[in-house]
Length: 201
Image (cartoon, rainbow, N blue to C red):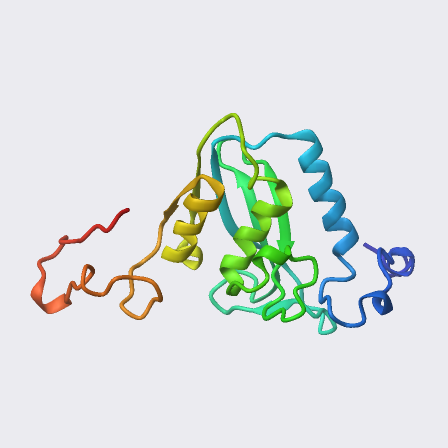
């Protein structure tokens, strides 16, 4: 777009005053838009039994963006990451939030999820914000996650508190917290090609 048009839009786009957040909320300029999108999703769609939680991103090279991330393995090296809870059947985004890194102030985070590690906090906060912690006539749900959310503590919390079974497509590493090292003790030199172990609960 022309520079003049960009400056017109930029001059009029002030969804929220920076001073109101006192510097605690890194996504203060996006908060209003995200709240509007999440509220519209809740009002127009009922999420089904199969869900997925993953991160997505939007390219951003602005040096003044407080939530910009650098990841050389991604197509866009500089980007803003989003945590996305979506319906796995209809590909509908039900809840979206910005990844802020370490957020000690827990702005816009439910108090019941405030003391959890970052990834667990993002998933459980999405459940509380969308009301998935309440009883649903559909019964139990199923959540698919990637390697980032492959945490046994999170899977147990989802089942016990939210009636959500979790499948984490993750690689088992001996240093990952929560995994039982005695059960998953495969050693590369002692195993044949294609041999694997499965742990489930």
